[in-house]
Image (cartoon, rainbow, N blue to C red; front, side, top):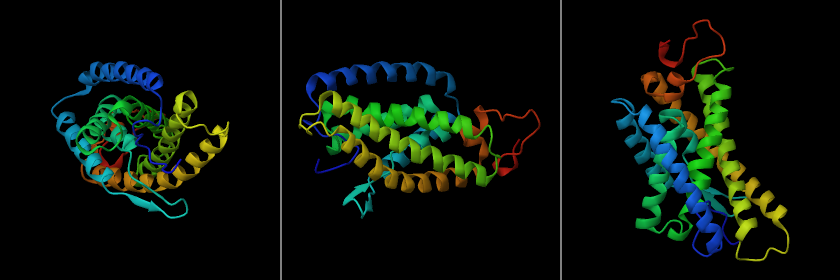
Length: 238
């Protein structure tokens, strides 16, 4: 594997497996559309557009991973889940991936279902599950929100990378000689480093938004704290 970027290019995974994941991605995105419509309001709709634009812009900026000889960029699943929720968030990331594949050639068009599954669906879902758990136990302060954003972003990147490993095991076009464990370890190690960068960017962005407009952070509005006592959130809004 000459590159360990998350965007899968044409020819890396065989056609049948790519087709299966395309169907799965389409079905999952349909569910996201149906569920996301319930969340959309005058506040969330423009926020979704801003989130998609921000993710698109940041994904154009790579940061180097010197120890691995590769570069990484923000995947955006955790950021989107925190700001606009899991359903709309997955759609935001998917739209970015579609535009990148069709307009900029970043990721193969035939592999779009694989990329959407890993980054838009798997990454966002894992991030939101972690967010839901952490925000119920951590204080809703800048520090608590920052830790939640950092951890969810980091782990979502690692899990998304392992999604690619599963796909390669099912239909990779290059024989690794049975060394799928080595691929999993390499992908996990590299994307752990990438996840640290993603975690820092996500935490900084979300905490900044929350300090100014905590009502714009979906996770703070939608997820109730574990205690029934009033818990102040970032920005002083209860």
